[in-house]
Length: 405
Ligand SMILES: Nc1ncnc2c1ncn2[C@@H]1O[C@H](COP(=O)(O)OP(=O)(O)OP(=O)(O)O)[C@@H](O)[C@H]1O
Ligand SMILES: [Mg+2]
Image 1 (tube, rainbow, N blue to C red):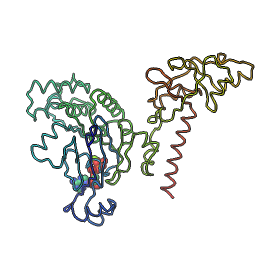
Image 2 (image 1 turned 90 degrees about the vertical axis):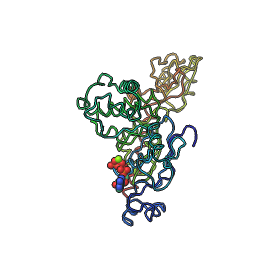
Image 3 (image 1 turned 180 degrees about the horizontal axis):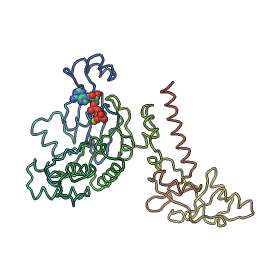
């Protein structure tokens, strides 16, 4: 296990039925599909040959339709389910070799779990619900309350500490659930459809808050959802499951721009690409010219692009020469770029998504892509964005034909 790896599943199989290690496992291992194994043996394939590895500090999302094996997979990580075959390693420990108090302690120390249904005690206050896990661990009251208040502060509920959960909205109750998992300060958060019961708006707020919290705490989060938009929004990487098997693992952009199968492409269709694809994926090397260049020199530099940037000694862009305007100015008899230099050009960062630059890109000029220090690292034009969107559309179309032919 490499240093930055904290959870690893190796060829894990989970068969449900009276004889999980019998013929059903043999058939699943031979590559037979879930439905066929079930028809042949009356055993349900929960997971078949599932392997993935989660890095420390990563938000790893498992996405799939109902019955695809998501909950089964997350439950093998803390041994709420045993496994039929394979290996589950968490922080160097073979989880399924643990039993009794060793297992309990390992779970407590390493993992916090948040479920879809809030599972709060209705008669205990918010702070007592938050500190419940610590109480079970025997942490004394003062320390417990301090940790609980810290966790409630993280989820924005400190002023509700003494309320009863029933006085809280669904979204707030789910935040208590999250606070409860955070209170024991585990390395790993296991979240099974944690936001799925919430209204869309509240759900988005919770996603935002989780991203904020994650930025402060850098936990390892294994998050399960059946919503690809949610997966792409919060995941550093996304694992797509179908019928107990892994279909694709990749960054949100990889899933979106290189769907591995028609099945993934079908999901991808419903996603707003502009929210996921970012500038760095398609930016090009910026063309540059000096401030005292002639229009002819500038046009040479621009070549088949839409413009060139004038850059100062620190590598920071100070102006833009657009091809169209340079051509027109040359035709009208001008000689220097200074006559057409645009100083109020737009700039963007490499990690900005398309949606955030549509307005600027819509002006039809090249945008300067700059690093945090303001240095020019690339350029992007509306055409580049349209081309990329078109590429993804065609890719998805291609899969569709494949599926329906
Ligand atoms: N205890 C069990 N006994 C028998 N079959 C089970 C059991 N738990 C899960 N399964 C089966 O294993 C498969 C995977 O179920 P799982 O709960 O992991 O799916 P899921 O992806 O979490 O679905 P959902 O989105 O509905 O929560 C399903 O076919 C399910 O019927
Ligand atoms: Mg589930």
